[in-house]
Length: 234
Image (cartoon, rainbow, N blue to C red; front, top):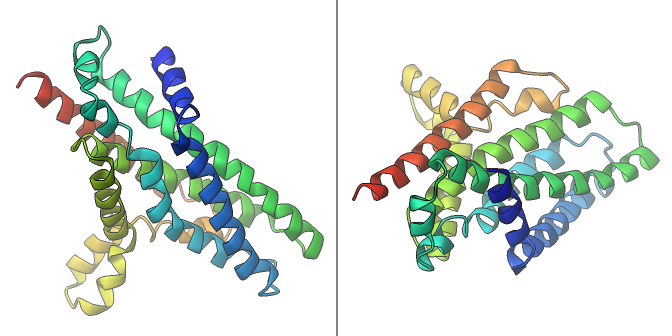
């Protein structure tokens, strides 16, 4: 699996996709940071991080759209299906490869915090919690994107459907105000990735949220494996 992971990470930097993701993410992140911290006059970054989560809906599909769609289009997915390695390792390498690029990019964006330190007092608990939440939500979103990529050979279709699915899963709880049924409201809140994000932005560690995000990633990791198991026996 390690060889596959190295190959996957390398593939992001032998094509424009990796560089495009990093450049666009840092550019968008810089604009959000400037608008919601520097220009607003606030040294607290909660709003900035909330908008960063929204940006994931648009940016994660750039990173994941090629994961399996490109393999299917080039017919190289047949080699993966017949390779002497488990499908779990193949899918894991794809998921972790995209996630490594994402983590590197998020860590690069922490340079924004230098300005916070210059112009105001930094709450390290809030800052650490907010970045941790970005990494956790990013893991879940990437797992979803890899799953969608496994369903089609068209990268554009994979990107659009990933955006739509992330939009629903992240913001589904916003419909709660229109629903009278308490049970249904609680279900929508449970599904939403955003509802568990809030505590981290206050510098509080939420174990249940940690388990939830990892579980979401695990579910879509499993579903992606099932997609290829089905294709293997067709």
